[in-house]
Image 1: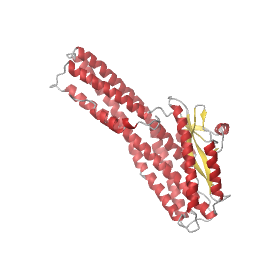
Image 2: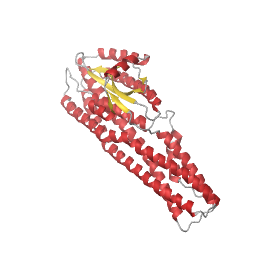
Image 3: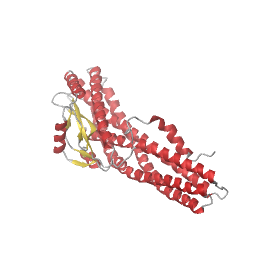
Image 4: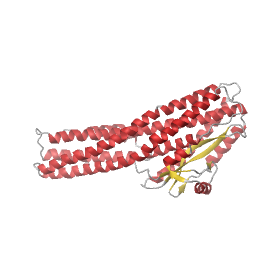
Length: 394
């Protein structure tokens, strides 16, 4: 028996159904918020003042400026398109679900009377109209994906240049690499803990139109005493009335451990640690930008598969050589029902909703703040749309 919607079945069943995450937000929205958090951290970063600049310091300065410029360029070229894209996908989803439900209803009529040319022609017209909307969504996703690929080849290159310079600096015999590695590990754990808190807050933002606030958090200060450079991480710090708490047991312990490790460093090691930690921020951004590219590629693949299946179905219906009987329409109805079930799984996976209410806040947040401290800082800060915020912190 002929199976329709075969392409849709292949890409959803074999690619993602078996790997739906327990965290329903490991999807476009989560990746969008995460990449903007990293962009905010990169844009907030500043050149450190060093006691003993290494031989590579001039190259590092030049490359850091280039990397920050690339991040700002990414903000204005890609982030804005990523923010608006959900509108196209949401509207397209409505068209797809309407088509599949209408297709089932048309098949019911045609099972009763296979000679009902009006119902058959109407089904072909529905497919034709919906394909126009679907192709519009595919075009929008493709445009954004091409932009992502263009800039995602630039960001890793910038991050690699910074890391290569730091690797040379770490070869200086006066630098204690073990202390840098230990500090780097603590700060990574701190960032991971903040990411975990962020994920819990994002999970509260399922409902459309819920306000989501992003800001940057000063994780640690690196460098010799009196010449500190702050290491930042970005995070979703509030959803509606829920606010991030930065004085939990694990965070407090890591804060103390980081401080102890910093105090144990001499000026040479502290200088290189500052460069290393700053470079890691750019590497974080490059990795997260790739994650949202992969997510969007999957979304595009599914929409293209549906478009291909509908094109084949339309051709089948329009063929003068094909005559359909009640059993045929029963089979086609089952295919529409299966396609609708697959589509609902896909929509649950990507879980896309409007990002119009994502905003940034210029609060000066630091590790160790309790909920009231964060709330007070956010009240002192300024709310603005996310793209304006990302530019302002740059």
